[in-house]
Length: 510
Image (tube, rainbow, N blue to C red):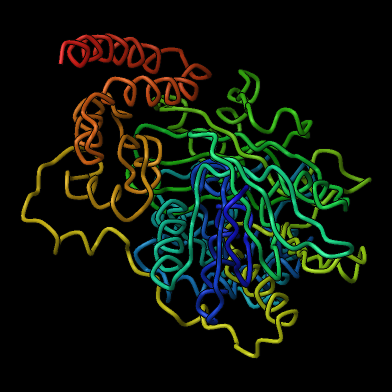
């Protein structure tokens, strides 16, 4: 027999939309359970370029998404300042754009569309653009200044998770939904399996929210309904240091490698857009062709890319609703889709929230939670547009006087590790990376991973686990390096390998 516990709402999916929905529901006084088959932010929410969209990118072809982005841009700057860097952004026009119909005449259309959507967009002289961002391509013939920025998706996910926990939400990572429980024409709960222990359980709720991103089609199928989605892979590259201090975009129709985003100590170029099968979503690989495309197009934004070491390549899958007209997903609207399956399919107690983007997660959560409250007859209104999100690592300073430094690149201490284990659900080094950014700096964990594994094993009370923690982390990190193994990157990989092998031996002796 399964242990059965009753909730008001079950949220499936630990990405930013699911976490935001769980937090919104909890703030409205609901009893909430969130389940995630892996760790939080392990899907598309942790595999993007971290752009704080102004909405300008969508202004011409998707004005609804543009308006949503600029509204949420302003809200996030107020409620999550520790996750945001107000870099500003440039949309540049290059001489070759003129031949494709995206010259200075298009720039005027672009600015008018931005203003119609409520986005501050101002044409500036190319000389001023170079002063504003010295790394930009000096061949630019036009530039538009917009209120883009950078957002740390890991901090944003952790902040939403922590606030949801503080308001009573139960969050179960590494908990896979094995079936959706139906009673007649109603969804009444889920059955799950812990992917680490194999333990099975059953949970009941009046409403279940499907916020599983691209994997939401599978959850819907378990419930007996169909959602047509378009799995679209976007590949990105991270450079070894910060190339630019202002977001640089191409002022043209969306295409591969047309956004360069500064974040923390690095810069990220993205993205590609390739239609893939559902079977590929769990094992994403960045191809050599995609890397070459991103390097080539990125150099048109910032020429110094050509002689800058690439740290790693990675990819995410956009949760887009299928369009018969666009198999690549490049031109599918990034608009929000909320499906009340009682209206659409005659299935009570089941809601799907999908589409959108990182930038509009809070609005997506509000829309989903409004739908939940209507079903439950709860009159509570949304508070997340004004309720502050705090940094979940700040409280740890009051717990200990120890300040043993573990990761020099990202300034992660042993207190951070211990707090993350005790309060943020960390079970391995990849979890720890997503909560604290450990191992995400220039050395990619080369110099700190042994210390980090020892600290994590110590915090978990299981020192014997150290070597296995290192092995799993190194294997995962290596996946992102193999696609960029040439030149300086290859030399760095060989250096890393020698150090890691040496430290494996050291930890094995311990």
